[in-house]
Length: 252
Length: 274
Image (cartoon, rainbow over all chains, first blue to last red; front, side, top):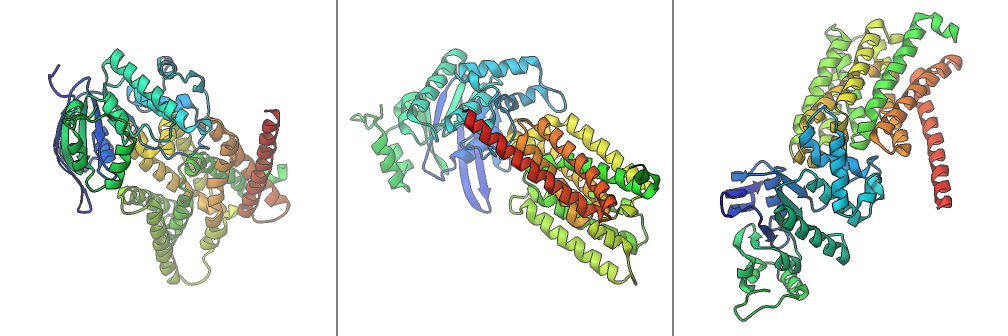
C-alpha cells in the first residue's frame, strides 16, 4: 500500500505580516488513509487545509498533491436570497470537467442526482439554496465536494452547525465512502471523540506539527502538549471525550 | 408618439436612454449579487475626470472616457486583490481623485461648460450618432459576455474565493466584469447623469431578485424593468416637459414600489395557503 504519498508536504512555512502561522511542516498522507487534524483554536488547521486545496498560494516549501481533491469548508458565508437551486451549487463541483464557456451536459446533471441520492437528500435537487437548513446545506456542500469523485476528501469541522443525528449520518456516509471507494479522507475537527473513533492517523498541529502518528499511538501526553496554551479547551475536550485511556496513556 | 420621433435629437435621446437602460440593467444583476453597488458611483465620478481631461486638451470625450474607464477597472482589480485594501476603499479614493483632477482642469476653462451640466443631470440633447453606436456595441458586448460566461458569472457572484478553488477563472471574470461595467457607466453618464446612473445599475437587479428563482430569470426581469423604465421615463419627460434622467429614475423607483407590494402580497398568499 505504501507507494508514493497522495499528499506530500515538505518544509511548509506560511506567514502573514511577519506573523508565523505555520512553521516547518513535513508530512505524507497515503492513499486510503483516514487522517484527523487536531489542534487548539488558531493552530492553523484551516490555513493548512486552504494551502492543500490551493486557496492560499503565498506559502514557502513544497506541497505535492497526486489526485483530485473534494473540499467541504468550515463555513460558507452566503447570501440566502441568492437565486440559485441546489443542483446548480452541486454542479460547481464539476466545473473543472466542463471548463469555461461550455455548458453542463445531461451526464453532469445525472451525477448530481446520484450523489444527492447517496447522501439521502435527493428531494433537495430543485430546492432554492435559501430554503435549506444548516444540516441540509452542509450535506449539499459534501455533495458538491464528492460529485467530481475525488481521490481525497477534506472536511473542515463538519460537525459544526449540525445536530447529533446529523453527525452520525455524516460519519456513516464517510465510512461508506471509505469502504466502497477507498477514498482518502482528511478530517479537521474539535470533536476528539469522532477523531479517535474513525481515523487511522492523526496530525497534531499548533503552528508546527507536534505529532504525526497512527491514531492508536497517540497518548494523553501528546494531547497535553498540543493543547498546552489552551487548557480550557483541553479540559472541555477531555470532558466531552468519552474515550478510555489505558495504562500506557493510549486512547481508545 | 409620432411627433416624438419626428425630431432626430428626441429620437436619439429615446434610443440612447433605452440602450443605456438595457446595458445597465444586464449588469445590475451581478452588481447586486456581488454587493458592489459602489462601483456605479465610482465609475460615474471617474467619468467626470475623463470629461474634464477631454475638454481641457480638446480630445474626443468618448475616447478619453474609454481609456480612463479601463484604467479605473484595472486599478480596482489589482489593488482590490491585496488583502490589506478593500475594493470599496480603492473605488472611493479613485472617485475623489478623478473629481479633483476634473475640477482643477475645469477651473482653467473660462465661461459656461455645457458638458458638465449634462454630466451631472444627464441631457438627451447631448447624444449624437457616435454615442448611440458606442452604446449599441456595448450592449451587444454585454449580452454576449453574459451568455458566454453565464455560469462563471453566477459562481463568481455567489462566492468568489470558493469558486476559485473549484477552478472557476474568477480573476478573469472579475477584471472583465469591472472593465465592461466601467465602460458602460462612463458612456451612459452623458445620457442620464452622474447621480442617476447608479439607480439604473441597482434598481433593475433589486426588482429581479425579488421574484427570480434563478439567475437567468433575474436577468430577464431586470432587463424588462430597465427597458420599461427608460422608455416610460423618456415618454413622460417629453409629455410633462421635465428632465429625462430624473424622470427615468422616478419611474424606476415607482416600478420598484409596485414590485415590492406585489411580492409582499404574493408571499402573504403563499403563507395563507400553507
